[in-house]
Every structure is written in structure tokens, then in C-alpha cells.
Length: 421
Image 1: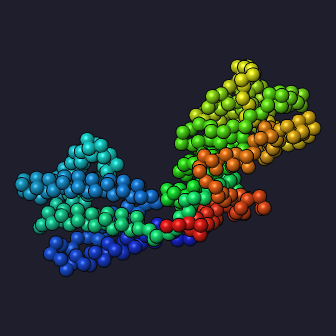
Image 2: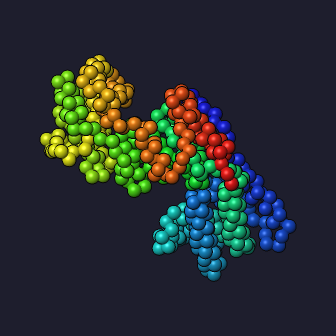
Image 3: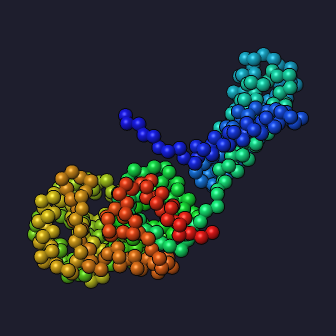
């Protein structure tokens, strides 16, 4: 296995700082009458609160707080009960503690704080099993709670600390996906990109993929603005889940395209827009790649495959694009025939597929282009200035040749340079 050595990230550094602060507070407490406590518990609580996002930190802090208080209350009740009964037999203490786990967990269920169950049990068991025979176990309960809340407070403060930086919230930043964002992706890219979006940076993507594919690829990214999808055939509002703009194939071009495809003995997927729903009509498959694509995608809630026998083909039919998935030699022959017949009335694009030996050919309207949709997207987002990121040198404002983390780092740098407080 090839080992990789990524740079030490901010979360690692913050974890170290949080633990160090917990130790510092412990030393200060040794001079106070409240009790020394145990820094181990505070450090654990602080580490639990160091998370990529602020809302996750607050949620974890709440879980830890509820779990600590619940476990401490039951731990105190457990100690009072055994002191009252004057029981000192270890075996009986241990068996009783296992039974006490039931009300501990059940209490978190009743409070609808199930995620705090684990912490409640940890706190309770640390009290019941390790300090039942201490001379003054009640002091440990108090210090246990104090330790945890010290760690929570330190963890939240350290995690939320940010140096004041400039953020550009007036420029529209548009990036491709393949070889730009999803190459060498890591949690760093996703977290930092989400932070930029949350801070007000206007970021979106322009891609050959369908909205369904974008949602799958960028599932951990909190995209907010409309997307340019299907190689410029449409603009899709990811929040409202609807298409804002579409460039349809003309009836004559689509009919002629399907005729030529059929003459070549090939099959095609016809992507039709019905109201705001994209329907994918298909016929008899001619190769294994088509079958695999259908089987892999037909269960997606964002793809609606329908047999071609149910297609109306009427005057109201709006075709966004036509897709052919075939062997390379067939694709090149089909492309030549289509260009000869259609000329500039359509835009034809070929690309590699995920199936060995097969390629995609897609037929779009001549008006379907990323450039045309970009001018419309500027109106939807209320922006004038645009900066594009892509992997083709000379075509985009920012050339990306290493993708993934490098793209996000360049985006952060440009946002700071163009930003304002």
C-alpha cells in the first residue's frame, strides 16, 4: 500500500491547542479550592468538539453536555444508594451497575437525546465502577462534571476561532467538476469549499453531467446557486429542484438525428423535458454498455427511464439532447455522418465513457453552450464579474492541472485577494 503524507491541517492543530489549554486549566485549578479534577476527561470533551463545521461542534457539545449530566446524576444516585445500604461487595456493585445502564439509556431516549446515550453510559460507569469505594466519591462526581464542561467550552471556543480574512461576495466563481474538483479529492476540499460557500462566496459548477450526477458526485458539498448542467443545455436550481433555462433541439434536427442513428444500426437515449421533469426514453439496447448504464442508473430518484413505446413524439415534445453509447469506431463514423447532415444546426460532442472500449456521443441544440448559459446565470445570481476554473489551458480564467485540493486552495487565495471585510 502506498502511503501518503498530507499536510497537517487546521483541525489537527486546533486539537493540540485545545488539549494544551485543558492541561493549563488543570494546573490553574490545583491552586483553587474547587478540586484538581482529572485533565483526561476535559481533553476528551474538547477533542469531541473539534469538528469541521460550527453546527457540528455545537451539536457535539450539546450531546456531551446532556450525556455528562445524565450519567453524573445516575452515578450520584448509584453512590447514594450503595452508601445507604452499606454494600461493599465488588461483585454486587458491578452487577448492579450493569442493571443501572437500562434507566441511563432509557432517560436519553425519553428526552429524545439518543446520541447522548453513549456519553451518559461512559460517565455513569466511570463513577460507578471506579469510584464506588472511594472515601469521598461525591467530589469525583462534581469534578467529573466540571472537567467535562471545561473541555466543552475550550473545544467550542478553539474550534470556532477564525482570524479575520477578506471574503469576496460579489464575484461569481464557476468551476468544472471532472479533473478540476473531483481529482484527488479529500475531506479538506469539501470542508474548505463548504466554509467558503457559508461565508458568502458565490460558487457553482458548470459541467457535462446531469443534475442527478452532480448531486451524487458533489453530495458532501453545500452548493447553493444554480448549476450549468448537461454541457450547457440547461441551468438547474439545486435548491428549488427545477430547471430555470433549457436549450431544446429543434424538431427537424432531432428527427434527422434519430433517423441517422437508426440507419447506422445504433440505439439512443432521448432526453425529453416534460414540465420540470427530465424523462429518458430508451429502446432496444444494442450493446452491453447501454444495459449496464441503464441498470446502474434506473433506480436513481433523479433519473426517469421510460420505454420508447410510450413516447408521444408530438409537437409539444421538448428534447434537450440525444445520447448514443457505442463502440469507438461506431461513434466516430456516426459523428462524421451527423456533421455532414446537420452542419451548424446542432452541436455534437463526443467523450470517453466509464465502459472500456465505448464512447459517448451527444447531440445538443446549437444554442446549448456553457457560454450562453453563463450569461443567463449571471442574471439569476445578480453578478457582473465571473471567474472560471477549468482544465483546458487558455479557455478558462484559472487553469487547473492538478485538481482537487489545488483548486480549492486557488479559489481561497483569489477570494482573499478580491475580497473585502
